[in-house]
Image (cartoon, rainbow, N blue to C red; front, side, top):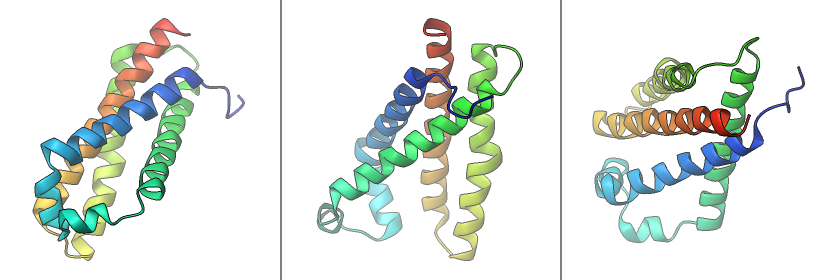
Length: 140
């Protein structure tokens, strides 16, 4: 199997959806709590290099989405929508959240920040898995 033999509509759509979820989560839903947990003011956040931050975040979303698509494509049979969503959730619960949890323990980050970020990654991968599942149904 070629590593680039994936559903590219799903890759881009899922990356975009994950990016949108992040904008909502770290904006109106948890933005102020997140800023407090990381010790940043609104002014400090606004002073960031937004093209680099948002461009980099979207590039990472694309990479994560491609890795998920590649994982789905390696199965010898077409996976059901439920399996794709469950696999994406499993990636968040089994890989992403333990990784950030370990980093936060050693860097002594707050529990509040851990739960804000862990919930985001769970939502991010659930959204991406859902888009991959839907795209696989409509664009395979």
